[in-house]
Amino acid sequence: MSLVGAPATYSLLLPPGWVRIPLRGRTRESLEEKVFRGIEKVPADVSREKGMAYRLHVRRRVEKLAEDARRSGGLDLYVPVRARPGGAVLAASFVVAEAVGEGGVRPEVLLGRLAVEAGEVRGVGETAGVRREYVKEPDEGEPEADTVTRHVDYVLPVPGDEGRWLTVSFSTAGDGDPVSPFTRAVTELFDAIMSTFAWSHRPSEGPFAG
Image (cartoon, rainbow, N blue to C red; front, side):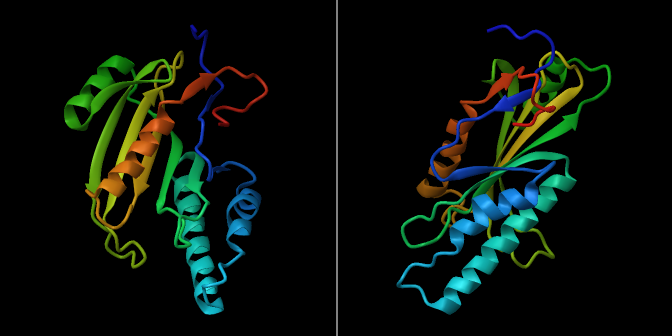
């Protein structure tokens, strides 16, 4: 399918248990409906105190993720909400955000630079993008971020709109080991989600409403 002009939005197919939280409208309502309401029920073998502490931890973590993403130009936050065996939700998320490229620099030139610096060129949504994978140590001054995380970033030029880009930034703590088979499997899940990325020209949608 050939694209005429710049797309209005994008789409992704999510696996069961993942939800999209818009960051430019109805964020609070979406968090309550899609995330927080689902953690109200505590398994019978979990004490009330532990259940309350867990719900508070999830609420604080997701609210901070949403606020940080919004301040960084985020369009949408994606998080898993279905608990794994044992009662815990998968520690993973990704953010789709807008970015502005260098004025006068063609997308293929900038992609080439990014690939040489820290990534690889991949086809995503009928366009060429750059994928970068790395491990990040906890940030100092954030007591809750005490786990090493594995990250994957995609940088995609918006077709037909030179100088406009989308970034898709994923992170996961996995099982606490950034190189374990489980953590790598979670990362592969994100890459599988990205393989479904598509641009859309739906006129009724706002710019990159997702």
